[in-house]
Image (cartoon, rainbow, N blue to C red; front, side):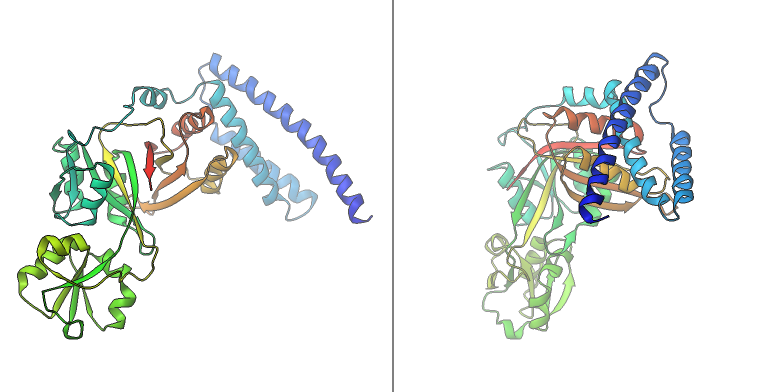
Length: 380
């Protein structure tokens, strides 16, 4: 038998499989109708596990080693069948209602109250003015203070950095997103051009140390090492600039923005000192209220996983089946005392697509600790 003969046999088998898969999906729809009539849950974890084990045994009996591959195929079929059942049952009534009741636009710049971490001249200040032109944020010392301000209605929105293209995720902010479960109302990607700042007349050769937020230090690691500067973490880039300005010490410097140099009367010793040219930080806008604009293009979720082998793979495959592109996957400890994790994901999408709503509504009923965090516009 040559390759063309083998492929013809595969095509014949595939044609039979297509018919059988369609028949199986018909049965899944009938199951959904029965469960609806009898007020039964869609997910029957015990039955699914029994089917998977039976498939593995049967295939391994046919030929050793086939069982695991067959189990993956059958798990995907059951996921698809369950998705169909959720669709028939219009699952996720609570989530659907939240989407229907969501606000459709952000509060205008002339009326909005914004909370940011740091002081004037921080990159969060720049991000705030990119999203809300002309606004004057109120600044707080820590990231959690920003969340508290939104929670206590001292601010309508909080603006926080979540990841940088060279230094990675801001883990503290992701932990707080998972703790507070506020929604995300908007996001923006901001080009970050770090400057080395010092007292007027400072010479680079005389510097001994540089202060900045740990992210700023990480993003400029090559420059710091090349000039043999001692990196010293500080709470915020702009706060580091202010401290240097107030210190009167010509041997120390700060990594911050050119705006911070102007505000605090510092000299720009070197510009664009980040290790990579395309250095961007993503900022999110947190909100107590759900806001979904018509041009929303990003969706965020938080969830835990059931204690089932391959559960993460199976969840991610659901997004692939729906044709959705994941752009972020972050895992953080649940802080429950055990080795359990919460997952944060971003993916491209808009609730104008009914299939997207159906998927999220299905997941809302299947996944532990599920939270829909928002469908929002990510600005360039």
